[in-house]
Length: 212
Ligand SMILES: CC(=O)SCCNC(=O)CCNC(=O)[C@H](O)C(C)(C)COP(=O)(O)OP(=O)(O)OC[C@H]1O[C@@H](n2cnc3c(N)ncnc32)[C@H](O)[C@@H]1OP(=O)(O)O
Image (cartoon, rainbow, N blue to C red; front, side, top):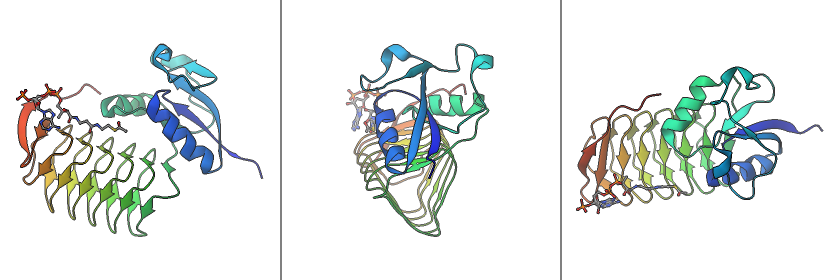
């Protein structure tokens, strides 16, 4: 049987993880693109320039693409300028409830768990061993970092990152483009554009709305 084909946008460390998931899932990677080839991971082969230099020259048509870029605002920007079909990458050891939904372009890494009725947006990253409780909503371009835990009915807004090992208690709403620091415990709703750290989590900074 002919292999499914995919192109990877992004050639850093995260791209290596996505590549392995796709290969394990039976894909052939036909091209890898990066806007900063000089920063690419040493193991990347057959690298081509990205679309930022000249969008009109980018081969939008062709094999579908996955955006394997770790920074949420970069992922959002790239998703907005590419006119391609997108695929998702879900590691075989991830546990995803039948009633959970996952939108296009999303990556779910080894050992992650997504419980019933949760809705995961586009181009989201659910990282290694992260857990998403029941009835959660995770917005487009968000990142739930390794071993972070969202309890039930939690909402994470567009573009927000929940840092490694952070915990979010039930029913808390995290706004858009927030960063929850590593190891934080979030016990109250978080306004858009906040950076929050500690236990109990406290907002230490507010960022400007990213240009995407
Ligand atoms: C596979 C992977 O690699 S996935 C990657 C996952 N990445 C992460 O989880 C990283 C999450 N990022 C963090 O925790 C960062 O420290 C951030 C975003 C919270 C803060 O970063 P910055 O905005 O650069 O803040 P900065 O480092 O200047 O620290 C500001 C203050 O917050 C404190 N602080 C920073 N991070 C934390 C934290 N996680 N917990 C508690 N306090 C913290 C600092 O000690 C400092 O305190 P001070 O002002 O009293 O000295």
